Length: 497
Image (cartoon, rainbow, N blue to C red; front, side):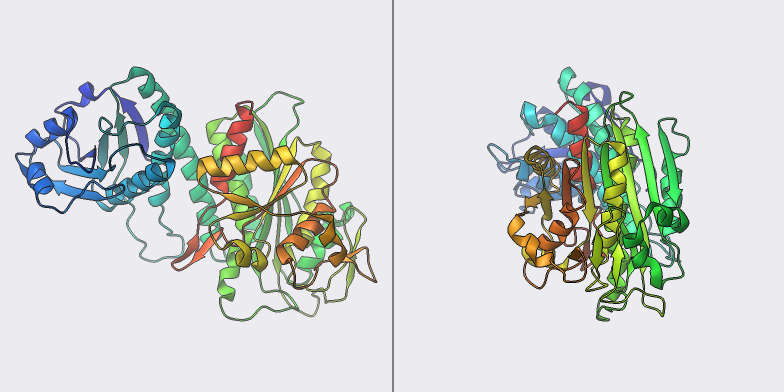
């Protein structure tokens, strides 16, 4: 979709002017406010007939599009029910509005807010959500399609409010929402891209592209020789079976004051995961191109952070590699030494995400971070525990955990706190190394987090297991999560939260 422009204005400036689509919130009593009555009059009876037809009840999230002969070529009525609305209702309204509008051929739209009385605390949030939904639902994967779907026609969206203060707030909120949506869509596009295109080098090029032209950003990429010199033999054990070189990608954004501790995002970037010698079953193995969803979300978040010009220092670290079987691949029972000097018995080569992340977490120490959050499609066990609705959250700091949970609630990209108890650590005991890379069949997501916690003792750290939330299988495609959560978390930190 071409860049979608957002703005907010006084409705009087648009009165009587032509638009492809006028959007009107309508309650379940089907009573129209002044803006609705004016639109009904201009529609030469079309809107009145639609309301009398019984096809539209005004229930929350219901939509009805009618074509008119007046200045508004289309009128999109969006049901808002009656009485007080909860945030869940606003989410339904925003999503339904976005889907219906983008499905039309309208190139510009104006939304009249008269009937929809949004409380003060939710006003900016709702405006931001509308913009995010419009950008999100406008995504179309195209890279490897000979005949991709045509992008939506919409190029301009105006929010009309008769409250001057709310109009000013809406303008900035719409822009933030669009920037968050664009970051989410970048993550989706990267994760949707086939693994023969989206290699570790491709991720490195995307990171360099984000830094290019931004004087507050820089990017460096470490090759396998540099990683070996740092002692990253855990990470390198994963890439031993493939001809595609691994990359450690470091993208820095210095939007905050010099010397302020940065917030660090660490992304798992396994661009394809065959399982290695511990080969996965063939069914749905194609979906293992999504195993770099953590890396994709980190890059999407960095794009949003830079587009918003947040006054914050942020570092992204991406451990990018392929996990393939071959005569040179790491074998179950092998022992490797991590950058931290901790030895690891590799009991299962399909538990590779933690092997690349542990060295990246050690590397993060050099930035003396304010916080570190790693994001990874790490365990099938997390899918069993939480399904696709929530990402699993583990943390060694209570404040950090609460901040992430709150950001997830605000962005509706939610996480659920999971235990990180010492009781689980003994499952990682090994007779031949300091620890094993798996902890047995019980509590697989928990023991994976416990493994990572051994390498995150020098800073406030959280781990997001997004194995269930990063992509859908039907229809197949990346969700872009948890870019919404991470972007909101960093916005909150920039605001002093």
